[in-house]
Length: 317
Image 1 (cartoon, helix red, strand yellow):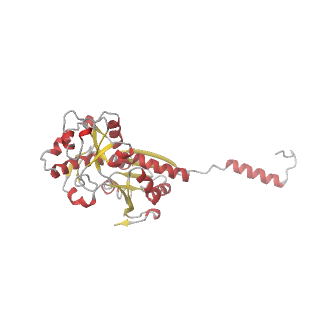
Image 2: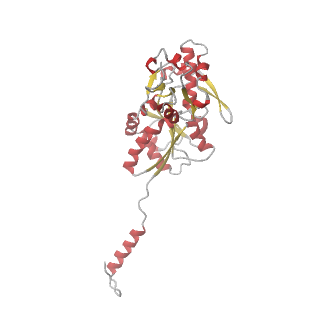
Image 3: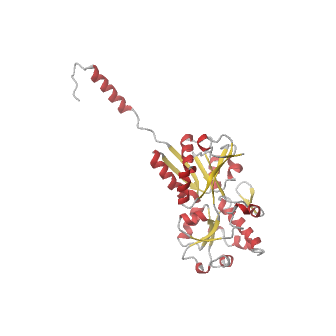
């Protein structure tokens, strides 16, 4: 637009002022959501959050790893996300409640399986009767996660103890545990699955959801030992393992597998975190998780105090 050098009409002044204001006005600020997710949740949660991001414009920053490691990032390194989703809901009362967060949600189930590929030694012979004998063969490479870092690691050891009792096979747990030296152990489920997929391992003991989400074959174990059936909770509780960590020794007791999630008190983008978690726990979000092999609960259970209103669908003392 050409404006007179000496005389500017009032209307032109107004338009010019508005134009300058528009140029200085920042673009709409997008929500940022930093999500810590257990490695076994990484792929399903990413897929669901991609939908959330497309529909809201939010920017998702996701970090995955072993659940205990993620919790300690908060408690020891003071690196606080907006959402934290862990493979064992018990990590919340043990490490994060009430300091890091006053509440958490139980939102999904899982069970332990034996995962393998077409290249695994003796894969054609693997079944509900033979799996113990196959895993104990000296040439078979058996992997598991580190029990000091990942719930799948100590759940594997608990499964071994349950199997020893269930099959009336004294010494089985110790024999199976010895089949995985430190060189075959990994920090989290994703690293373990990658080793199996590449042919560096024959079998791993891990979550059914992980095996399904990355396309691994797997053997379903009896519900009496797979930690996936709430009706066997009393049976699971009879098995326990002592796990050494860098600072102390912790006793882990068998229980049905339940995943937990929360928005920490000090979340840098807390409101955005609440919106993201509310989406993941909604009917639609649960359907997206189920489509990626996560057995989401029909009704997430809220435990603790000060649950944000968008998440207070059900509260358990």
